[in-house]
Length: 462
Image (cartoon, rainbow, N blue to C red; front, side):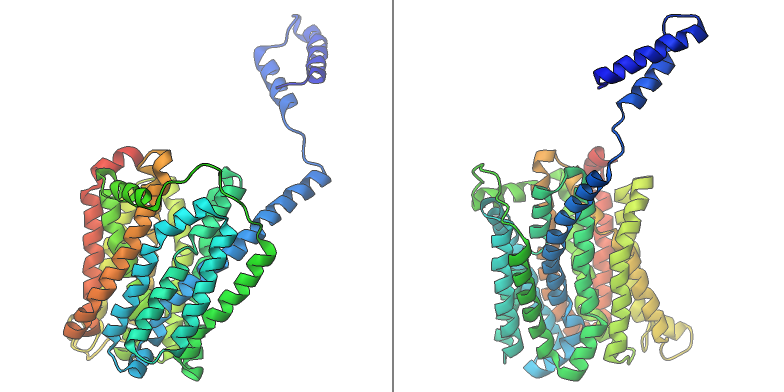
């Protein structure tokens, strides 16, 4: 819109300029350009600029504080990668048993997704995350004190429940308090902050465990959770949800499951079931033991490799997002990425003692550089994983987007729980080499499954 003063100015310019053109009105293109120029918003004053940056900071601080909960969640779920052997030795079980026990964390995490979502519809984000942080404190303290396998299982369940809403809480807060046009940006910031938990559980935790034992490492999240809990009380205002009556837990579960098994999301759900399980299996459980046992690396050195893998998982999703934005084809990127990730995992055991590639090259075992290269390459190509959420959101109507994302998230963690449990007998029968082949084949089958079911979903995305 052009204000009356601007119209008067435009009329004056028109009258003066008409003498030059010899006509009563300006050429249409000149009128259009003048109108656009006059209707532009003025440049912000210093006061407006200060208010703008102030509002951005007011939104950023609470979101960064809430995202620290997701940092704790990632720290807890990836600790076994640098501690499984010592935990197994102390509890007098095998590393495969520890893998099966940590599956209870993912099962509890998955089971808590929908109840936490319903709680966020009824109560403030501050109330929900405060409760969950308290549960993490209890579970983490118990984990540092347990004396047997049963106690370890119980602590994994408690920690899974406590961590299950650590991503949903900051995302919900962002949805309620920020401009919708900036939601994608805030989501990326939240995920980036959260993934630093995997950085902490790499070399730093490996060093801590090497010098002070695994129990202190499992107790440390209690201190982190207490600090975040106090910070939440000081910085987060209790934003209430809408006054609409939310659906019951039962109806929400039925709706999510209905969308999850629908043809439009079938391929996405199939790949999500194995995708996170494969990634967390390597980063959160088996990567460290393989490097230490098969390649003789020290715990801290193995932690350094996992640190590089983690950095790939933080940086590469943003690069993949730019590639997808430029060229499209999310189905193709996901399928190719997971197939290549699977191939990398299958190749890792071939360089070990008596491995196929080692025999072909006429040496006993390939150097650790071979494994490190493949593990880092795995981190690069598995970083297509976040595109599953984009497909889930785009494959349904906007009013069902939240439920579609819940279905994808449920598939992530149910798959992680199931595959972690299955990995125990695989390890007992075929060793660590069998685990990597098992996870690699699952990744390849998941990528092929998505491509097989792509035709229905692709109609809404590509």
